[in-house]
Image: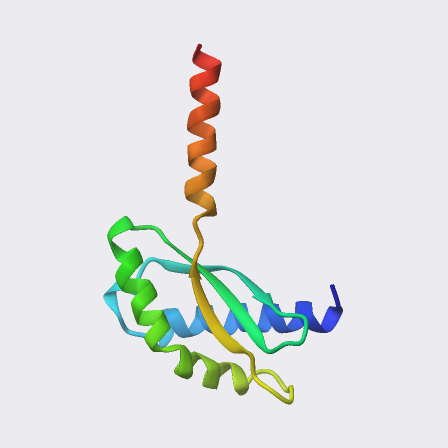
Length: 112
């Protein structure tokens, strides 16, 4: 990975997290957090992984974030100085759920 790509990923993560908490006033985003950002090698796409604490907020929260992609891209454009601002792709981060399933399986094996 390049230093520029890492820097852009961290700026995008920080700016989107701040926008979710301060500018997007939707109850479904109250317990949302940006867990990771992956930028493509040509810096044209940024995949933002978001997790939710409450299960019932996931679907509505992702829907709100997808609808506000243009707004989020505008915020990012003010923070990074590149020729093109990456297109934002929003994905649900399910790594914590998968981790807890693995823990449950391991605990079940340990008990047997």
